[in-house]
Image (cartoon, rainbow, N blue to C red; front, top):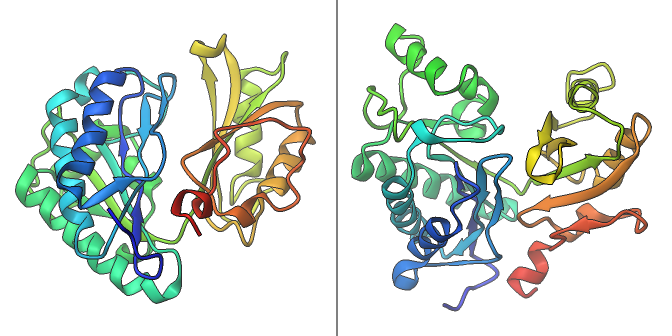
Amino acid sequence: MNLNPATLLTAVPNVSDGADLAALAAVGSGFEEGGAARLLAEAHSDPDHGRTVFTLASEPGLMAGALVNGARVALERFSLALHSGSHPNVGVVDVVPIVYLDEVRRAIAIAEALAAAERLASELELPVFLYGEIAGGRTRAELRRGGIAGLTARIASGELRPDFGPAKVDPAKGATLVAARPPLVAFNLELAAPATLADAKAIAAQLREGGEAGLPGLRAIGLELPARGGVAQVSMNIEDHRALSLAEVVAAVSERAEVAEAELVGLAPQAAFDAWPESLPCRNRATLEDALGF
């Protein structure tokens, strides 16, 4: 499909499986079904996280339908009850952010996010919660607190109510979180031995926004990667790469532990790599500009 760089939107749906590559390929085909959207990059699957990140592009008015098509396949192929992985989640189709590349497209992205939320709820019977700016700043972490069991309990108690869809949560499907936001950078740093899971958790706690040495707009957790030999990893989201560069994050983590390798999840704006330490290898390094051809 031909995309107009001046109007296109992107979306980054996350599916809670990182191991069944054949089923995940079917989900990717579902997102592209009918030609309304196209995948901008190869899906990023991680069996330790139990998560796959897809990156789609579409013209306004078409993204919601593409997201429903791919989500339908995911719900057919996966069950949250069988999920394995360390990344927090509350649903098979866990988060669906619509991404606007500039302020001109912000209102369009918000409209598309609301349309996607309504259709995911009405067509797939998913409880859908909004987060971010379209939900008064409510965060993913707030909604994921306690996992799907915690979310289900808070719905049952009346503390929470889905913004769209049924109040009853199917334990196989879970719930879906929808937002409209500018690009963020999902980014992992693997620590060199002898760093441990405890070290990664301590570094994440210190550096995440609100921590002892908190960095602006940084979300961080510490994980262990059994599939990579038990490597300790600091897994992060950088909410605003203009306020906090990848290089600054690398420097802060490196003050606390030796960093062996970096990994980009999905795509990042080219500017996020300003002053990147070229001696540090980065897997999957790819930019939005390259993927979109401008």
